[in-house]
Figure 1 (cartoon, rainbow, N blue to C red):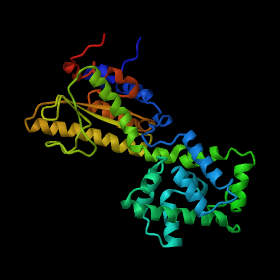
Figure 2: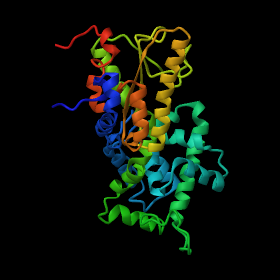
Figure 3: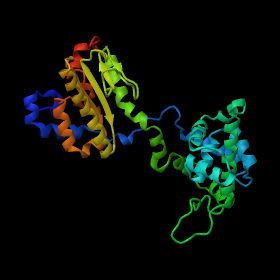
Figure 4: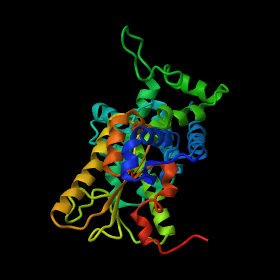
Length: 351
């Protein structure tokens, strides 16, 4: 017997078997944290390694490590800036604060983030040097280089009881001597720096693409709607729609006279899951208010995924009942169209 899902049951059976349906939905949730969207600016290891080798070659395996040699390397490959930040072991805003404190630079945290992002294009600084409007960016970058060289050359100060210096790492503790050792003594240094660049396992990248994670579900929904020829309107981020205090992610066939609305949510955090369940329930409350105002009834559908929702069984029970079972996960998304009012708008049938 095939295990049923809440969207396949009528209201009476749904209420009778609600605990079973909550369990089935929770079991369908996937741990999406294992997969991250790369995004257009993701730096892959071969690119990072190439920048590392550029810096190593230009500085003579860091024996001639100076502002001038680092700048030459940067003009050859802009991602050298990312390598340098990884050697420091700092975030872009922290690096900017060093430049402000030590050199009086006017670089802001936002500017530092922008430069750090721009350097992922290997030609970024070559292009900046051709633009008159980029003078401020180049001055701020020079300040970052100068303070990085200054701190790396000094290395970590003597250890103090109760505190740990950020440069007390095997590759920076004793200044250039440590750096040269790391690059020459059969240590896979580029690999280490790349891991550091990405952050505690991929944390820096995960933060950078946090908005794209949610789009994974939205893109999967949109692809199914397109494949079935379903007229739909996908709303933009933070878009306002007349008549909707809170805009859903999809309106079918449109937002003027919707028959179905869809909200897509992914989360790996139970606290965030609570907030996202609340948002979905608000759409159901909003639908009921529209009915009282004389507007047409429309179906509210939730498409959710991520381990965060597993931790909130009571919220899942409430959500399934409020939406009459129309709660889908990534693993049941193929049933979305055939088990909802969307089926009435299908114009293309798969062979």
